[in-house]
Structure formats: C-alpha cells, structure tokens
View 1 (tube, protein in one colour):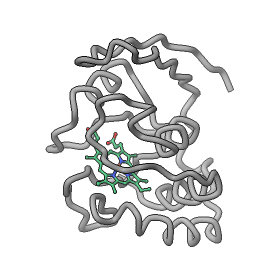
View 2 (spheres, protein in one colour; view 1 turned 90 degrees about the vertical axis):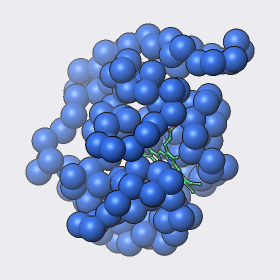
View 3 (spheres, protein in one colour; view 1 turned 30 degrees about the horizontal axis):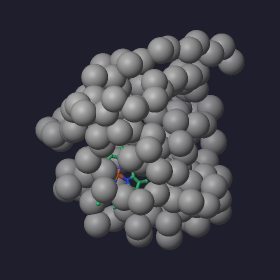
View 4 (spheres, helix red, strand yellow; view 1 turned 60 degrees about the horizontal axis):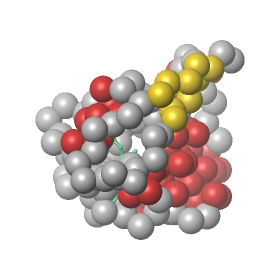
Length: 143
Ligand code: HEC
C-alpha cells in the first residue's frame, strides 16, 4: 500500500500547546477486500456498550449526542449529514482525515489528547484489544 503524509495544522481555539497531528492516509481498501473477523466483532459489540449512550449503529440509527457510526471505518471524518461537529473535528475533516483503523485506534485511546477541542466526552479505551475489537464491530455496519 502506498502512504502519503499530510501535515495538518487545525486552527484550534485557545490551544497553543497543541501538537501538530500528522495523519497518515493509506489507500482505502475495497469493501469486499475488508474481511470481518466475526468473533472479534462480537467482542467489540460488548465494548460498544461504552459508546451507546452517545452513538447508534444499524439501519435505524440516528444521530444522538454523537454522530451515527455506520460505515465510519475507512470513511472521511466529520462527514455524517446533519451532525453538528466541533470546530476541531471540522478542521481535521477539511484537512482530509480518513478514519483508517490506525487513526480510529489513536482517537479512541484518548479522544481529547488526539483531537484537542473535540466534543466527544469520553475518557478513552486504554486496552488495545478493546480498540481493535470495537473497530472490527464498527466494520460490520455500512453507510
Ligand atoms: C459522551 C458521549 C460519547 C461517548 C461515550 C462516545 N462518543 Fe464518540 N463522539 C461523540 C461526539 C460528541 C462526537 C463528535 C466529536 C466532535 O465533533 O468533536 C464523537 C465522534 C466520534 C467519532 C468520529 C465520527 C465522525 O463522524 O467523524 C468516532 C469514530 C467515535 N466518536 C467513536 C466512538 C466510540 C467507538 C466510542 C466508544 C468506545 C465513543 N465514540 C464514545 C460522543 C461520544
């Protein structure tokens, strides 16, 4: 896979010490190429309980305090219709951030450290196994 490095400097209010995030945008695989590990996805469904208070997935999903997460894996960040994102999320979305599994794992580890100014009020998933599992679960929902 080819990879290109984009240097994005989001215009974040009152965050002078914010580090400049470097997003590695890899080629997005074709949907049929992304095989889903169902056992791992089932484990991820349990982890997703931590997200459910704010996010919905599935056919009848609606935006709540967080956007719907159908098809989010390998999709452009900040692109759910009708959801009012934070300035910080809009800035990285304009910078071309794609939610690759790598970027999602980094975001979910500690959302506010990854994206200063995000309105996702969630402490994060400390265990890498939980991050990987919940991402696998999210892969089972397309937009
Ligand atoms: C307290 C509410 C809350 C919880 C809990 C929460 N989120 Fe979020 N999430 C948000 C909000 C609000 C946003 C929009 C952030 C912004 O605009 O800065 C968001 C954004 C996201 C995005 C980016 C979506 C996009 O369209 O670009 C992903 C992916 C995500 N959350 C995944 C998760 C996962 C996975 C969990 C559970 C492990 C979780 N969130 C837990 C509120 C929450």
